[in-house]
Length: 579
Image 1 (cartoon, rainbow, N blue to C red):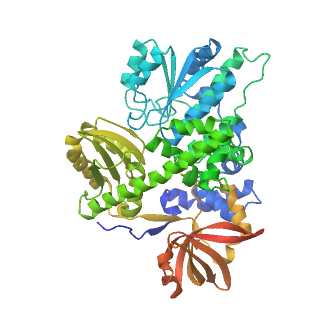
Image 2 (cartoon, rainbow, N blue to C red):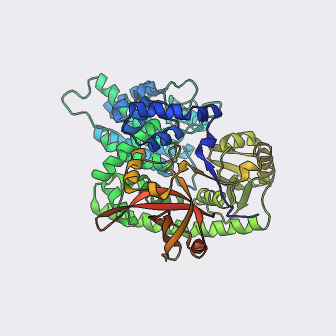
Image 3 (cartoon, rainbow, N blue to C red):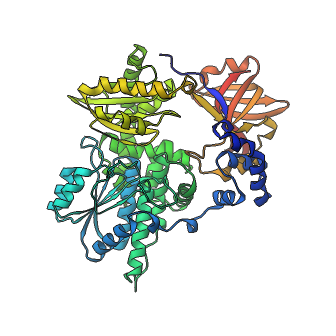
């Protein structure tokens, strides 16, 4: 199978409905009418991100925490908050059970920080990857034996049918807070909080698990306030929870729009001015100097995730909760070392997967591979890298004797969760969303599952769908690539899912002062009609000779380079095509 496919450059307008494109100028004019000092380019970018009025543009650009909806609008929230308030007042033992990824780690840290401010009798538990995702029967029985009468799940629990029944039989109240797609039948928990559940009136559905935990904290505080519990004492602020929101929401790749955008922007502000001790220690270990969505996604989150992938996710929670500088430095060094080991294992796993793919072990539209040497902690990342190389829905399964644990990633136009649901007769369990999912399967069912999964892809994905695409927002000649425009584009930050970094194309440029940087990267000056702009192209060192031979087209994002107090425009090159 051919890998590293050439990408088709596609205008982001092509993703919109035809009638929306026809109304483009009217929408842009409406946005400008309410924001007369806005750069028309930014108005166009807002339109391409689904903004259709001046009011929506104002909310997008200047949203703040005061605009957040009341937590009680979330189905099940009032009942859960009342039960937790009882536990806080009566000093009942509360146990938080979370997932072992970055969203789960930050969800646990969020609630633990809040309960500590309340003086509640709370602890947390996160399973190892060997124990499996989510709540476990063993953990519930252990909690009951230790006198715990209230368990709160965060970022998991929406499929915990058996565990909910066990908790009930042991006299333990189970509150489920989750954000993953609910099954048709919900577990019989005391209360379920999940914005995706049927009839939930909460106006925003795409919260991360830590986002649900944050709103739960707000609801608990509101309930205790209404009961007069704070009389004579200060109410705990929610601001210290915002850093966890930013980290977990960015790491979990949920859409950075609406409420998520407001929460992440506020959280980044705290991380930049008054970060938790553990976060600062991890930044130091990772060599991070500037806090942004990018540095969290590519430097911080992988190190927090490494604890859950290879060892214990509790390390990540300990780091975020500690007030001890020495402990923070020690844990940060451990996480950095674990991340290096994770990278080594990931590379070995990916190499083996690619060898098998090149030998023809794939479907016509999909990749499904199982192997006892695949490490369950890295198969999800490897699937993402396989999609980058082959642009096919990919599932890797780590085998342990007759059982397998799989992780999958998908491409546009192929809903992974729905596809697994249609193949559920071959699976022992699954969960996730349209772009990523996990599954459990018996070895004997893997071949039949792979065949059924590929048949689904064949029936729903066209030849056009199998061509990787790189989306751009507009044509931008080099003369318009100024430091002032780059600064204006920062209004659209933070970037992430459904609010991507703006990308542009510029045709017929030439290169000057071409240099290879750090063996893998490329630095050059792009030239066009007398304009010259510095460029950096990560991972494109092999194209150094090519771009010195005539003109070419570039796909890029526009940013700012700071050097010795001087600020200048810089293009980050995403792709190059010969003109």
